[in-house]
Structure formats: structure tokens, C-alpha cells
Length: 237
Ligand SMILES: [Zn+2]
Image (cartoon, rainbow, N blue to C red; front, side, top):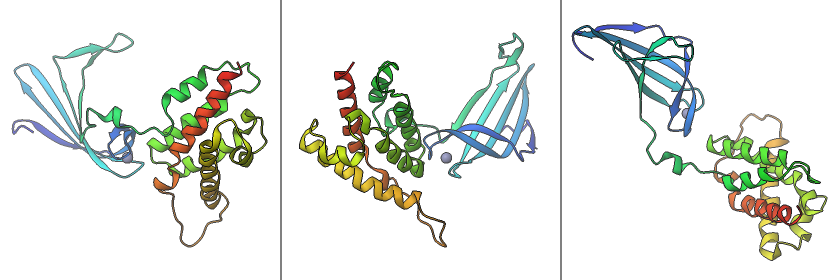
């Protein structure tokens, strides 16, 4: 901040905005904790700087944002009104390799292939596709309760694709995927069901436990399941 600038502290109570959260790994809703404003002139040009402290409403992580504007740098909004160009810098910022670091629960290409199947097939994959997409979003935002509920729902949803009535039948009787497929499905069925049941059908207690990332780590098994679903659907156009 320059010594010849006019500095003021702005009331920020109740202010919210979307800012990047490194901990959550995406843009999230933040509450604004404090704003310090500064403005100064250089010749006829006026410069404004806003220094914000923001706190993620999801995980509580505090980060900082610097917004700057200059009276000489104009642009036009969608109605053709002149507006000042805002430059935003966030600290700490996302690393450049951030996008490639995002861990998906389900490969995006798998979801895209499921989406490409026509809706007028004997079985409509719209809900399965949506559940897988929501599973990815929940995993990325560390919403592990949602992950475990969705995994459970997916297992209950897919048996008709295999021509069977329950997931236990897929794990024990489905021959199309071979022995390793059945082993993977038995692990998925037994472990995820136990974990899901412990979170789904339990009344509130004096002391509660929360699922961890490790507890929802069924990525490999879900990938095997979705891969087989796609193989079956490809074979039955
Ligand atoms: Zn966060």
C-alpha cells in the first residue's frame, strides 16, 4: 500500500462471494472477513485497490484476494455500459497443474460414453450417469457421506443391466466378467454396503464418527463395474 494513498476499512459483515479454496480444490462460497480499500492518483489516473480476507464457508480455510482497478482501463458490460476492468489475484492461488491434479472418482470418459447411449434403449441410463457425475463432484469436494450414499444407490440401481435382480447376484452369479470381476464386485458389495449401512440407518448418538477418504475408496471396483456396464450396453444397441 502506498503512503500517499487514501486508506479505509470497509464494513464486510454478511458479505459473501465465490473465491478459490485450495483446501476444497475448487471455487467455493466464502464469507468476507475484512476489506481494506486504498485509492491514489498517478497524474489524472485514479487507482483503487481492495484487499480482502475471505473464509471458505465449507472448510473454514482463510485466504486473501487483491482486486485492483484503474480509471484509465475501461471495458463495456453486456448492456454496453462502460465499466472498469478488475484485476483479481488470489493468495494462495491454484497451482498451474491443478486441473490435472483433480482426482475423479469415475473417469470422465466413462461418464461421457454412458451419456452417449440413446435414451430410447430398453434401459434408460440417465439416472446412472447423473449419479456417477454427482459421485465425482462429491469426491472432489470431500463430501464423503454423499459418496458412500451414492455408491450404495448405484449398486442398487444397476442389476437389471446385467439381467439380474440384486447386486449380490451380480457379485456371486454373473459369469460375463470372469472371476476377477466377481471378486471385485464381492469386495464392492460387502465393504461398501457395511459402511453405507453404518451411516445410513443409524440414529444420532452422543459421539459420532465421520467417513474418511479411505472409507469411500472404491474407485477401482466402481471403475470395473462401470466398465462392464458399458461393455454390456455397447453389445446391445
Ligand atoms: Zn474450502
